[in-house]
Amino acid sequence: MSKARTIGKNISYIALSRCVYMLISFMLFPFIVAHVGKEIYGVYLIVLTVTDYFGLLDFGMMSALTKYVSEYHGKKDFKGIGHIINASFTFYVIIGVLISLMLFLSSKYFIYFFKIDPANIRVMRDLLIAAALSSLVVWPMGIFRRAIQGLNMWNLDAAISIINQILLAIVTFFILIKGFGILQLFIAMQILNFTAGAVFFWFTVKHVNFRIVFPHRNINTFKFIFNFSIFMFLSSLSAIFLYQIHNIIIGYFVSVSAISLYAVAFNLQNYFRVINSTLGGPAWIAASEMEGAHDYARQKQLLFKGTKLMSAVLLPAVLIAIFFAKPFIIHWMGESFRESILPARIIMSLWLFSGTSELAVGLLSAKGIVRRTFFIILAAGISNLLVSLIFVKSLGIVALAAGLAFSMIFVAFPLELALSLKMLKVTFKEYFDKSVKVNLLLYLLVAIFSTVVLFYLYPSNFIATIFEMAVIYGVSLGFYYFKLLKPAEKEEVKKAIGFDMKFQRNVKWA
Image: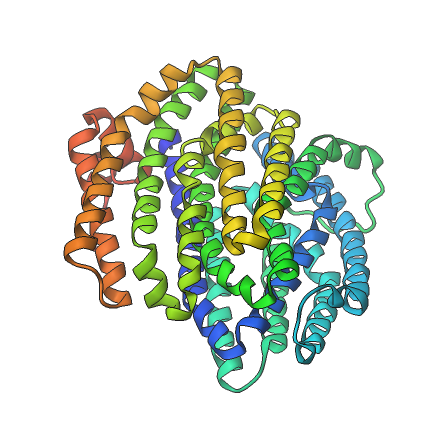
């Protein structure tokens, strides 16, 4: 199977899973807020944020687990895979206990940090206690999904994840309709997560044929893993200031209910974050294989072609979302969320830049360059925090959106791109001419279409909004494919999605 076909298949599996996730979360968000209220949902988001913070105690172990399982699988070293998984499982049992203790302490003292209605303090306490108990089992079982990803079993990962999301949607509907609250919903979510982890465990054991050894006492295995994971941990720690610190700042300086207003804007950009990582993940794996083979020429070609096609898929969607943010949010969430429109447009604008550098950043990781990227992320996190704190009292949630966009556009993007081009020995002019310049006409076309449609056919409801956005996106990509791509590039696209002519001839219709 060609490299383009392999990358295309993996992207398809990830895309399918994440599309289901985004669709379900998109539909559940207003449903949950409508049933539990803005403040209760804000409390729920704070608990998730605190849990994510404590999850950073893994010191980047999850990323190292996926990397080394994949590496050893390529060597057919199943014994090595067993050592990596057992070391990770032992580590996460310990981490689960530590996180559980910290969440339990948070339930006693941390709850008074926020401006919460006294009637809802008990809700936050109960959620933190539930999170503490679930951490004992959810964290250790979570490693097996990453093991499956490392084994390149993306079809299995997608299938289990989709089933889990569908079950979550059904459970959420019945729990809230029957009059239960956010606590019962949270518990149900943790049960589903544990069940999914158990299924991943079963398939991992079946494929690798190893047994759990607890505790794993091989110190050399832990040293080997931490030599890579520590910088992934530091990068994740810095990323807090980019993506997670905002809920804490808003809850303290503005109000807990304002977190829900900001969540609308943040969730919209987060969809693009998911799409971006979906497109870049398989390409990063391919780049890692090329690094092992010292095939640097193909890495450059992957950078040029991959960036061109990935940004052609992502950036038009970002532009359309920015133009349609007002009717989209009003028809989706209601008039009470009008304050979310400007922050949404500001945050989404960062993907006009980050969407063109995803593959370049992924190539840095493939080359094992994690230390310098950590310092870039740290600088971006600090600038984000400073802008947010300086302007939050005067601008409210707009300041948080501005801080995030500023840090990504003016700090992270130029520094990461410059480092990547330097490591690949590529000039900016070469990169711009081969990866960016050819797509500018597409972006202009999208902007013109969006402006004209909004002026003459302003959508009157949510369905009309989605339809108009989809039409603009489809027409723009159709124009790009038929008019802007070269014949050879069209063939590569067909191979990537599995519809090249040879494949079509070999299909046997029933």
